[in-house]
Image 1 (cartoon, each protein chain N blue to C red):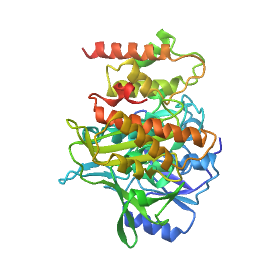
Image 2: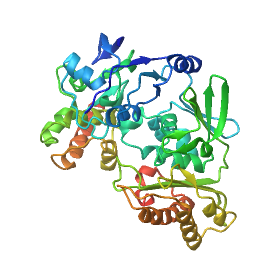
Image 3: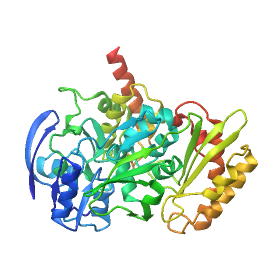
Image 4: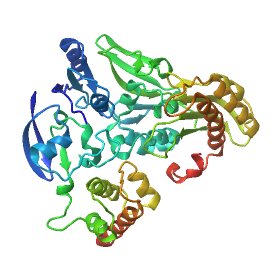
Length: 303
Length: 159
């Protein structure tokens, strides 16, 4: 296995200092969060950063906070393991915790961060569909101040985001959600663990369980287009409707039609499209069933 | 570009002057001589290089030495309790939870970390925790059994 070339590692203690370092040292530098993408890119993909700016010494960039308005703020350096095991996330959005738990191994998730996972912009990132279904935003800080961008607008293509090189993603902002919000994330992959998704589907909607009516329906797909995407056609089919198996089937077919998968070593486009159909339906019905208990114990929910 | 770091390594304060880009795995094996930690894939898929960093299991093949100032690191060499093997080590020996043994140090570090968090795991929880530790020799049945036996012994000691 290739070893990293010599490089300098800076450990700034403020965002301003980190951005200024990148400006001062010039092109060829990379920000470092958990390193589970960066170090692999160095070892396997020939990436040779001239220097690395480690963000982990900057205070205030990690942790999960419930806002008084019911929203949630997740610091960019919060590890995926923290998201997976956070009592707040498990209580409010269990499918978000589950999406984090689908990434790599426990070892990887103790290092990998939610901000790094978004900034790396892999089309198959498991957390992205769950965050899109929650209509999350990201806070980005640059030398000239901060801006808040819808996560859906943040991704520009595989590995591409709207961020300038010296900008830093500092926070994931999940807007307030109804207590009646239900959701589900299904990662469909060849192996149960330690694999990338063929496809991923997240659904979230406000559910009136007695009438079986769903509102504010959000459906997001991973690994079926250059960026994680919303399936708006499928959402509008369901909006305000009574959820039946037949309707879930139709929504699945519509999501499949909207998806834009490619054929590659993992799967053909046709198979991916069909798995979007099947798993969108399953996710909708699973979310509506709201079975109690820890998701790790509910394997029947997964496929 | 060297960097001075101070770490706690297997309970001992250690001052090092190391190239910042040196991976923790190579630092342990090649510079310090702790060769119990193994390299399998080098890309965070196999878990052979698992060590505890600030109490959490991580892949040492994916961490720069330059990130480590102030860190607490425990390797397989630091797992035993005094002169005595840790209960997970004894259980792996007793139950035959190893064949060639290459994955074993990583398995043991991961098993220890699981039992620190969850003293009474189900088989399913053990498999979930060990998903990032690959064994190419044999099945995982005896490994899961060994973790169960270690868990039982640790619980008995606490009782």
